[in-house]
Image (cartoon, rainbow, N blue to C red; front, side, top):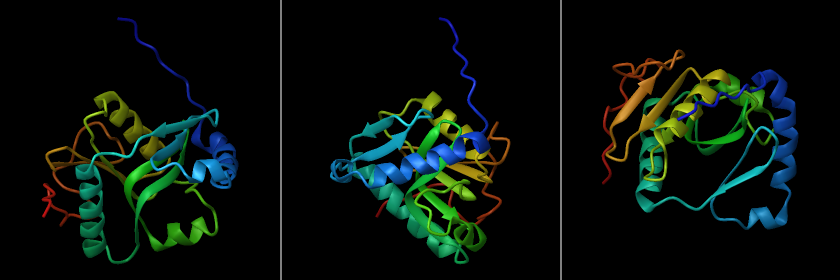
Length: 181
């Protein structure tokens, strides 16, 4: 099978376009009625996904709750829009420091990724898709990317993203497995 390599523009080049396009999409009344995930590609084309299964949302909520408990000096967000070199992507959960939140101002999309971006795996996710998102978040400035498997097992990746760390460096007390109640 042939391998395809895409040359993405540098994040700093793509950022202004992403922020304009995302602000435009948020004012679309038809799009506001869509009950799923909306992201864009680097050309500003809309990528829509149906709502995930209930377990996905439960893991999002539990991870957000745990992050809020352990990382009190910052803000936890879900479905967090992040400008990347390949358009605007929505992190399932994110944690942003107070300084990053101040820098966000009144923008409707993070021009730089929050320090922690979390993706929750769904049956429809391909491993390559999650690896790509991890690379995009790290390129956009995330310090760590966490992946939650369908089993609740957590994998923590640092700035290199090549292999998992034993634990998060930013939130070392975060559990290695998320349990749903």
